[in-house]
Amino acid sequence: SEGGNGKVQWYAMAQACYEEAKNAGSAEADAALSALEQRKAQMLAKSPNGQGELFAFYRAGVTAGQAGEYEKAYAIFYDDVFFFGDTKGIADIAGLYLKGKGVAQDVEKAIALYEYVAKVLKSGNGYSALAKVYEAPDGTYPPAAHSTDTALEYYRLSFEGEDLRSADFKGPR
Image (tube, rainbow, N blue to C red; front, side):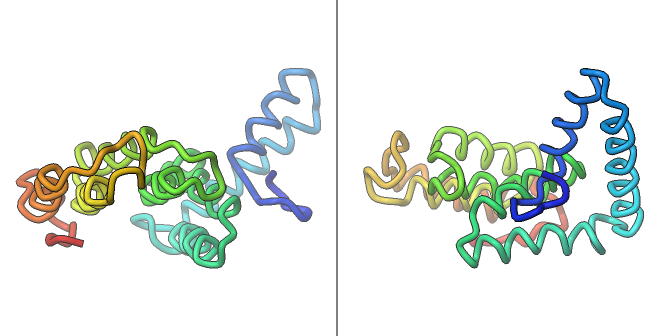
């Protein structure tokens, strides 16, 4: 929830709980929602072009994942995407689903998220992530089966895709 108190800080979950309480008639929930929206507005105001506080928040998720704190990492990436409206955390969420870290493993969901990163957000990193899924030996990420041809095509797209964002680093990752 929002404040932590020994639990993972999760703004989007706090917002959902406050909204449910508000709908049940809680005046305190209305005030809490207002404070949460103010916090969000302040953080976004201090984050031009997704940098500043928002980027530091996202990096806290990366650090949590590196430390093996996968549930905390998931909550931060989820908030990055669904509370703050940023897109950096989508591929990170996909990676947690792919390996079942902090969430139940769901390879199909991971692939769908990587495809979104590649095709909608036009990021070569999404294509590279897809390539790695199909490059892995059979049984690594069921139901995705090993396919060198599919992996090579995704690696090629990560480098040569004409629709990649100009700011995206091109080249197999």
